[in-house]
Image 1: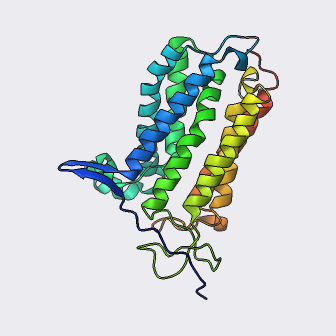
Image 2: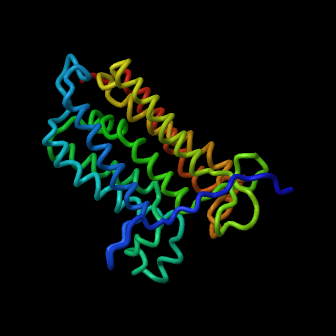
Length: 272
């Protein structure tokens, strides 16, 4: 039965168009998320009190150098993750389409792998404590996740399953039935709630003095939040449900939960 629904805010996915220059909300979300995370991370590495009795893991100048590595890891990993995890057959037929990022198609799990790779390489190259660098990045990441999911909502993509809840939306291109706004659920859980949890760990419980606690909590927290939201999110049409009713998002989140728990448990024996 079709229930009531909220009117979908018809926001043009293109924020600004000046001749050949096109600025989309989705691209802006990535830019704002990276810049805001960069600003917040610089505050963290500049605060000696957050790391006491040890020194901060890196200097603000080293963080500036690292941001290029991180940006490449996020974009390259996110794109290749989508290609490999969600639509490998189609891109195998048309490999040039991999470069067409303006058509959409980014995977958080791929971006996560790309980011971890960038962090490991940079930490060894610059002789920076690996777990501490992971913690700095983890604390800033929910800021970018929030804006990214809001952009998904504006683009009317990655919508939820059909429902009769009064806060449902009828998304353009998703048929005439109301659906969960799963993008907003993810923005709330992966962005707002997860950031608040990590902020408390870092600021109230001096989480940086227990290397791996913040990054482990982020990894397990994201995996749990994503697994929960997958019950409300419509699976990709070309993939559908996997065995046992799991979705690809659920399957990719399970290793993250296990990895995060491992990081949290190990932080009890790590010292700066």
